[in-house]
Image (tube, protein in one colour):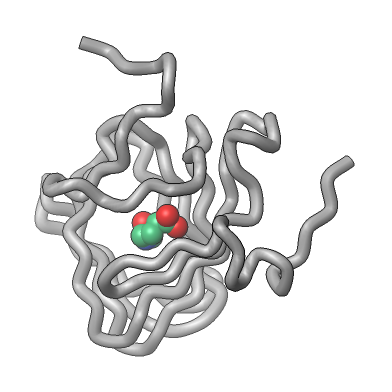
Length: 132
Ligand code: 9YT
């Protein structure tokens, strides 16, 4: 069994930051669960253009306020605590935080720990899963 706490992840190598967000990676590929789970802060005022073309991601908001926009259809949805969105079609999207949001993010396949977004807003494919 694996037991970890947010306190032990904060400030460790599994605490990853980039412009507009800070991802505390609670479970990663190395934990062998087949998914990763992050406790992520999206800073107030952040606007992130994302496109997880190599991963499926589900995101559950537990604090804060913002919106998500599909850059495929143009549809927008408000995000508040209790809202989950799932990028089941690897949807290109824009995430905006009007108040700092705290999100529980799960990735399949799991991220390995050090990923930050590339120019497309994607994370690199998990090792061994690259497709042509
Ligand atoms: C919701 C989202 O995709 N935020 C960017 C950070 C990322 N989810 C992560 O690695 O926790």
